[in-house]
Amino acid sequence: MKKFIAVLAFFTVTLLSTDAAFAQEARQNFQAIAKHKTHEITKQFKVDGKSQRVIYNAYMLRERKLAAMLRNNPNTAADTKAIDTELYSKLKTVLTEEQIKKLKQMDIEKPKTKK
Image (cartoon, rainbow, N blue to C red; front, side, top):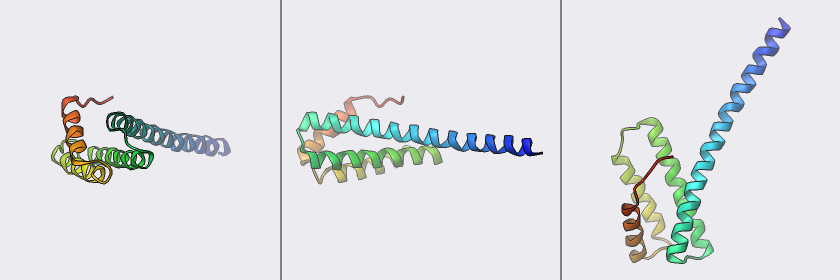
């Protein structure tokens, strides 16, 4: 009986740690996307460090919201426009209107691919 409880406890701990590993991997994907977009914008528009932080945080929030939306309802494309509108409103605090227009054009020109 003790062995059975020990084995059961082992499998429970293993399953819990697996969920944590997947969550960590998803968080790293969000960070990679946010870092990449921040780097692109920094390179294109030459923004300062404080602005980079705002841009990074805006893209992290966007990626989290997109992931949550896709988890709940994978067929919802209209909600992505609302998320993107929120993203651009946050970016307007650090970028000019002209830079926002260029950024939107860059996003349209590049096909969005999932990895």
